[in-house]
Length: 108
Image (cartoon, rainbow, N blue to C red; front, side, top):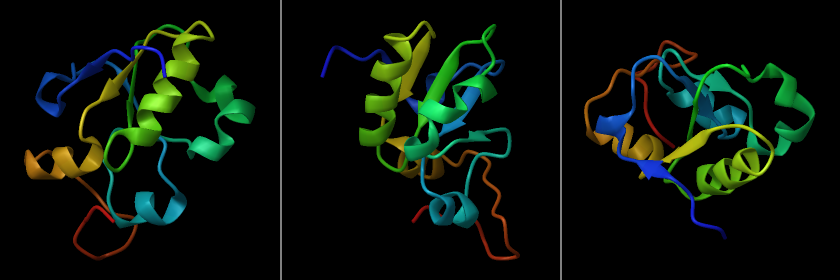
């Protein structure tokens, strides 16, 4: 895989698009409140959902899928950055999370 730009969860700027590429069940269990959800498998057909005027920061559960998506986006005209450690690091850092149910948000 080509060199993929990445940052820690603490270094994610406030005014960026946060793209969560996890599967629906992972998203439902817990995600960042401001994130845009496009599962990795749907990305190609949903590229039009990404804003063209903002940096994209990509997150998954641990950083593997998001690194692949980051490399793909950078190869196709976006300015994308991977978030090291993914949602596991996000949760460990105490960052805000919401779930799609009444349950306590969690990373699965």
